[in-house]
Image (cartoon, rainbow, N blue to C red; front, side, top):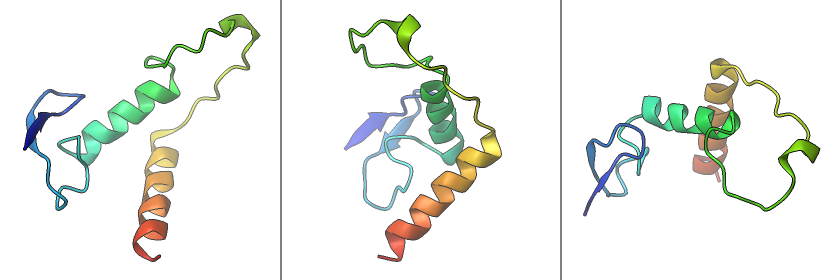
Length: 77
């Protein structure tokens, strides 16, 4: 089965060997994560946005380290 990468829209094969699925690459995966972290993407909650605490800025190196740790934890269990 093929899907489009949510970030760049490139066609991606949906197979277990693709560690970045549904993304085509780690780069697209990190771009998407950054958009969520910056609240460029969001799921509407109905809550008053002004009442929410500000989202701290996250450095790309921090994101990569977090993903690497999650991958290590996942594959070592």
